[in-house]
Amino acid sequence: MPLAHVSWAIADNADRKPCDAWVTDTFGAETIYEILITPETENTGLDREESLMMIGDTMVIPIAPAGPGQTAVSPTGEMLRRSAGPNRWLGVALKVADLKKTAAWFEAKDFKLHYDPGMENTYFLVGRKQALGVRLEILAQDLPNDPRLLSGWNPMRWRDDHPLGIEGLQSIGVSAPSLDVARACFAQRLEWPEIGSRTLPGEDAECVSFNMGDAVIEAMVPSVVDSELARHLRETQGIYCLTFKVRSAKAAADTLRSKGFDLIGDGATRFAIRPDQAFERTIYFTQNEVAGYPPLGSKILQLEEFAA
Image (cartoon, rainbow, N blue to C red; front, side, top):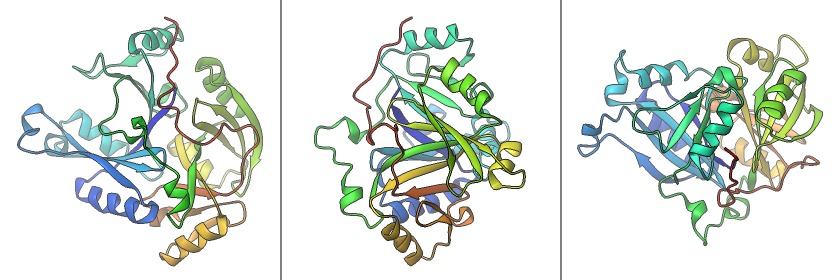
C-alpha cells in the first residue's frame, strides 16, 4: 500500500498558514493544492482547511478546523482539536487499487472500518486504537494535483537543488510497548513484512521495522522510562517522528543551524530540529542507509490488488 500522505492536526486555523510557511521555508515544500472554505465550498458543509504539500515524494498535510469545524458541536473540529497535541500526528493515508476488495480484506482481519457519509466509494478509516495509535486512511481516489502521477515529476530536485539535500522519507517512527506487540499488529494483522530489528541511534530505543510498500514503519520501544519516547508512549502513542534521508548530514545540519534551529540527537548519525521550534513535531534527518530498507521513492503508480 503506497503512502499517499502523512497528516497532522492544528487546533486553531489561525496557526495553519504560519505552519505552512514554516514547512515551505524549512523543507522547500511545494503546495500543490489547498482545500479552503470559499463562497463556492461553504454550502458543501466544509469544516476544515488544509494544504497538500510535497517534500520530495512525500506529501504532508497540516489540517485545521475551519468554518463549522470551529464550533464545539463539530465532530471533525473536535477530532482535530483532540489530535493537535505535541508530537501527535493525525495519521497516514495509503493508496489502494480497489476500495471494496481492500475493505473486505481488512474486515476479514477483524478491523472495524469507519466511512464518512458520502465517501463510501472514496476512502475508509481505521481508528488509532486498532493500529498502535496510528490512524489509517485507506483511499482509492487520486489526490488533487498529485504530481507523483505525472511523467515529468522529479523529486530529486529536493536532493540536488535544496540545501537540505533530502533524498526521501526513510521511515515513520511509532511508539510501541514492546517488539512483540508491534509484530502482532504490523506483521501478523496488517501483513507488512518485517525488515529487521536494531537499536535506534540516539533514541534509547529498540525498534523493529516493517515494509508498508514504499515506506517503513519503525516500531520504537523505549529503553528508559524518562525519555521523550517513553512519555509519548504513555500519553499519546502512535506516530512519534518522521526521518528523512539526506545526501549529507553535515550540510543538512549546517543549513538548519543557519536558520536558527537548535538540533537534538547526533549530527553524525540522526538528528532533529528541537520540537518546540518545529510546530511540536519531531522530524529527524540522517545520511545513513539501513540494511534491508526498500529503495527511497513513491510507488503510488504501483498499486496491488487485495483478494476479497
